[in-house]
Image: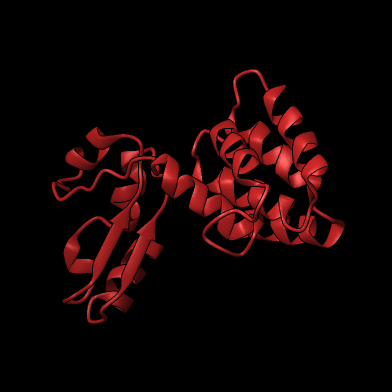
Amino acid sequence: LCILGLIDERLHDHRVLVIFDDVNNIKQLEALAGDISWFGPGSRVVVTTENKDLLHQHGINNTYHVGFPSTGEALEILCRYAFRNSYPHDGFQELALKVTDLCGNLPLGLCVVGSSLRGKKEDEWEDVMKRLESVLDRDIEEVLRVGYESLDENEQTLFLHIAVFFN
């Protein structure tokens, strides 16, 4: 309860950008963003959730639905991480499209798998694709695991630090 008073006390006259990611309980919103007056004029509060009803329960009516990227956008995401370019290198077009499809156009999966494929040869891409194809339901955790296991030790450590930071 003391923390709630501090939010209002410390931020009521500051313009802030607050982002609440993956909210799944109304109590989270009530505790951290109970009232718009807690934040100064011009403040923005962004809430991501899969539960649209939760937003309406809290009185949030200004919503924006974010869909999955198109196949072209997903390919560009993969290529930016795999090739550091917005399109695949020569000879990798078909492989890049297959990997994009196997990742289910999920942006995080595309980033992780794309990073793990950077600088790899075609046969190494084929190995990663076989591992992705063997994941029956292509659950995001498994897609990320395939990408993670392909990273070198330093990149794995960095990935874990980022994951812990976000959690």
